[in-house]
Image (cartoon, rainbow, N blue to C red):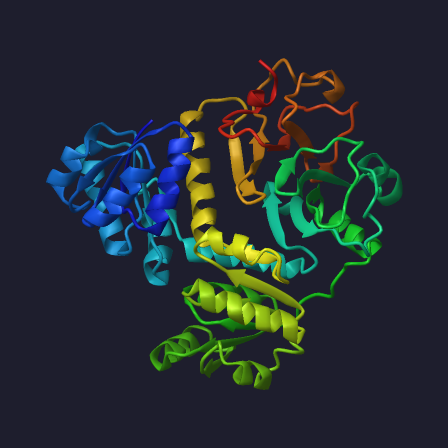
Length: 452
């Protein structure tokens, strides 16, 4: 596809890399010549220095002939204007990043009238992911599928766990048929494991199952943590969205913000939250506000370094669950050996959503298109949810008889309200949602999981 991307900042650079990997042709527009030089030196893209909302710049970038325009500058109004101008030029699909809470609420309602195909808010999406992890505090990360009927959770195996040293083929006998280890990170490599794989201490594993089955599994292996009842949040835009979700769930929320004006705004938007004016990196303040006894601590400032430092202090102090927001994945690698396990990267979440949308555009008439897409294992594997809408040769055929690629696994089948962890005799049927895990990138339809 021909795509025009407006904005070469951190979000634009990350998204450009993902779209190039998907095989698309990309033109990047930005005012900043240094950013354009950086992106062109690292990626095979065309660049244009100019105003992405300007008619002439968009015309020169080929927006009128493009299949899609994506606007991800730091200015919401510019992003909206870019999309509106591009629609006038003839582009059929537009995507805008809108971060301001008031703009986002209105645009979701008016996006069709304004000609926007997709509006996304990285902070709101990140808040939703953090909320899922807080609802399953035993996990480092939680992805939801089929409207919550299935989940994939990530956690690290320790020597104390009864699953350490256990072959996967024995998991079903010991813990039931409701869960499946679908991917394993071992010594820096990602595996789609088979039954003879033996779990080892230090393995980061990705387990699929229904939420109730997942909870029972964590209890069985002795890692179940009680539900979160109170949370300390660092300041930042995500705190507004997350605080709202948590308060609605009956969880006590304490927000530490060092800007007095922002404190007043937060108090106005979240009157039920306890909002404190102070420096969230101050150990004495964190001690005074109960960091040792809180159920969870979430670091949400704009500084990766500050978030990591405060998270390390919270983990060492005894906070029940610690979640760290980072903007650059390199920091996760640097602190990987420490006691931090739950990281959230808003740019990656947004990129997942846009890549999912782009693949859906390419296969809008396909019988088994992508419903959702998530990168896992530091971007080394993907989890895809497909909806089977039309009859196909593979329907009704036992899974053991299907020629599935060795780098791919059917992890779950959602039929009605039931999450099925499939065995060899199970089969895919019409109207099923199917969750597949793969280390092969670029799959667009369910038939891509088969050899040939």
